[in-house]
Length: 264
View 1 (cartoon, rainbow, N blue to C red):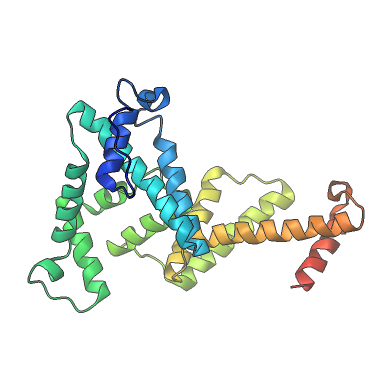
View 2: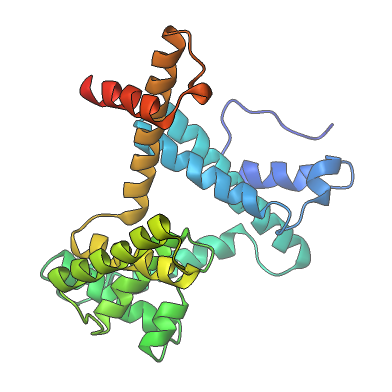
């Protein structure tokens, strides 16, 4: 664009102007066609990439991926600016006011005795500001688009906060063992094991994870990575032996898996 000013260093307002230019009459055909819905998943993908950068402790990657998340925030804000609804400053204004309101121990006169008090105040203020009149409202406010394990653990946590903690860890693990026994029987004997029963087992595992201070979502993600690592090691061993692992019997595969586990 003829009137675009190139700089040595840009800021968030330059990013806003660039997005506006991309969506202008003489801008980019792809950018002009986008809607909130069409780039919805892009937002999610960029957030996951930030999380990967954090897990890798990669500062350069984190800076880049945070920029991509910021682009999504600006892009959605510009689309609403075009409609006259709100702009990026309105977005910043709302989150600033939220932070001030939910930290009365910093910006007001409330006294706290540590993190637990801070979190309790945060939840109480949040519930009031969002017009949540019942404990059920707080559960319904957990987004349905969350990964199922994450959502299950948050629902369990909010229910417990409302006083619905019907079982201690011993009782809960006993129920999990009973549910797992039903799953084992179904797998071995062909007995029916419904989606509802499996869901109950997974939800109880989320509740148990919460009681043990474990993040269920992260635990499964780490196990996914360990599975890939083990799978890769087995494939490499069979390759070195000149064997296609797909041709092996279950017994032979178990022997390779045993070798991998013993080598660690």
